Amino acid sequence: MLNYRHLEKITKGFSNHRRIQIIELINEAPDLSLMEISSRLKINIKTANVHIGKLVSAGLVLKRNRGVNVLHKLSPLGSVILKFLRKLE
Image (tube, rainbow, N blue to C red; front, top):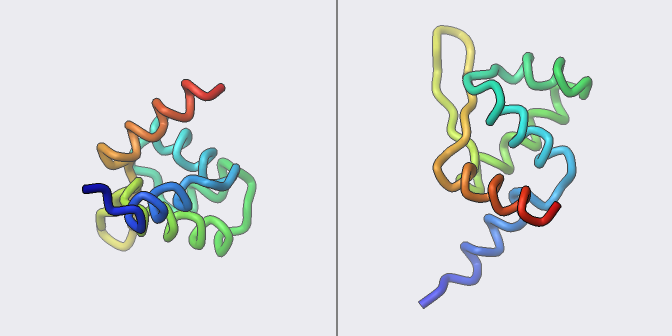
């Protein structure tokens, strides 16, 4: 049986143009830090942090620590969602 609340959480995770940009950016250049993401997209670091938090919560982006930096990459689910979004174009 489908868990509708889980599907809603995933859908809300990518239902923002900025979060879709972040998904595409991380797909093209995995292991980016928060600072690198905000710089490349020319957005405030706090804004980037909020969006990444929602992507992580939805299971679309994974975080890992490397020294003082936190690096981000797409999860397998994030890759599937990106393919889905490209089909909608």
